Structures are given as C-alpha cells and as structure tokens.
Image (cartoon, rainbow, N blue to C red; front, side, top):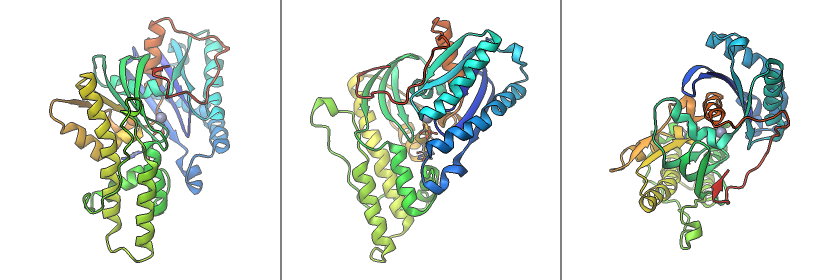
Length: 338
Ligand code: KG4
Ligand code: ZN
C-alpha cells in the first residue's frame, strides 16, 4: 500500500511516498529557513503563505521521484497537530482535496507521534521503549507503548531543548536555527571550561523527569556578554562546548533516571536535536542501554514519518472524514498522549 504523506506544521514543506509503512520511495523537504532567518524564528504568516506557494509542487515532485502516478497512491496521511495553525491548514486542506478528488482514505497524523515513528522507517523496533523527542518546539521523555499511544513521563517546564540551542546561537550571531552551528563550534572547544547551572526541580515525583532550559540559556548568554565586553578570556568555542555539554547532560540525566525507574533499556530518539553529535555519542556509550537514532534526514521535520505512521493508523481503521480539523496546541502535562 502506497501512502502519500504531507507535512506542513512549521517551516518545512514536505511530501513523501512510503510503501507499507517502511519503504521510503521519496521524501522531499523544502526548507523555508532562509525566509525566517532575518527574524531569528519562524514567522507564522510568512510560513503559511510559502506553504501555499509550494505545496502543489512538492507533492508533484514527491510522486515523480517515487515513480508513482497519482493513480498509484492508495491513501493520504497528513499532519494535523500540533503546529502553526495557518501552516497546518495548508497541508491539511491540500490533503483533503487530494483524497476527495481521488476518493482515497484520509488519515490525520500527530506530529509528535510521527517524530517518534521516524526511526521505524529504517529498522524494526520492538515496543515498548523509552522515547526521547527533542526539537525546537518539544522536549518529551515518554514511555512509548505503541505508535498511537505514549505515556509522557517528563517534559520541559520552559524552553524546549532546541529552542535553547537556537537562542544561544542567536546571541553568537550564528543565524537561525542554530543547533548545528553550536554543535560544530563545540568540537573545537573544551566542554569542561565553564560550569553552567543545571536545574534542580526533581524533589517531587511529579517533576521527576522534567527538564528546564531557561536558566542555562540565561547563564550562557551572560557569559557571552562578558566575553563580548572583553572581560572574559575564554574562547567562544569553550562557551559553546560547555553549554552543549550541560544542555545534553540535563537531558541524559532524566533519560537515565527514567530508564532505571521503568526498566526500559531501549531508548529511541527523534526530533532535530537528535542530530546532536554529543547526545548521540553520550547515549551510545551508556552501558546496558540500546540507543536508536534515526538518520539525520529523518530527525528533522519530514513527510515520510507522517506517511509511515499514517499507514499504521490506516491498518487500525483510523481514517478521518473531510471535517478533520487542525489543532495548534496539545497538552504535554496530561500523562496519556494523545
Ligand atoms: O524537529 P525539528 O526540525 O523542528 C521542530 O519540530 O522543532 O527541530 C529543529 C531544532 C532546532 O531547534 C535546531 O536548532 C535543532 O533542532 N537542531 C540541533 C541540531 N540540529 C538541529 N540542535 C542541536 N544539535 C544539532 N546538531
Ligand atoms: Zn518537528
């Protein structure tokens, strides 16, 4: 069964054709990053207008690259939440139109669950496992029981992990998004050069696996300001490496605690920050744990993960009607998700 996947929840306009939930025939991602760079963040109005311009072309190109004619598509899967509402509606409306015109089943996909599904496109992974979703918008540690059911164990109480990388990078003048640039600069710095603060919010059981990044971000920005003012002698690379070490330790501490408490020894990561070299090395080196990371192209937003998860949902009979709507926000503090 060939599923057309469509993803437009943020600033990536993507379409993919995936066969039987695993075989990626095409996965095209058009990035709007250059349009949003001057603003150091995604401007929702610019994003949705650009999706309108690109959506038809990206779907056509994904079909062409897969070598599949329109008549060869069996179903349409589309991201319906969470995300920027205007952006989501472009992909959703296009998917509805496509499905209606071709009389195909339509399935609405959750972006968070799609990120967690991404590594399943590359290998068979047994449930349950500990899922780690770290991106510019989300930081979630969850017990993943099935493709459509997770128990959220911990989340961020303020900034997302990727957001902290982006805000620190902005202070460096590295542009947006800045995670990759910080990762690269860290390679030439000493990760032990600076002691940055780690949050201490784990006294009560409720916050046991939660993380926080706003304190770290502020401390790093202050340190950078001192450097710019000529008071600090350490190099920019040392600050970046020390920030990265601390940001990843904050995450890894909670992941290891959750692994110990739940007895889950398999950790599956997803989201843009899963591309981080230190996170990958750190978890891979942890004895007694199996750490699974998707390839870099499947870490960031893409439609193949949407088509893959869509296929599973179709098999479960979870098709949607043309009244399917988009949702901008979801609650991460509710334990069961969705
Ligand atoms: O999953 P994604 O493409 O979009 C969201 O759903 O947010 O993730 C983008 C985020 C950005 O914050 C970006 O800076 C971060 O992932 N990122 C990284 C790295 N590559 C991307 N953060 C740290 N290290 C990296 N190598
Ligand atoms: Zn994402």
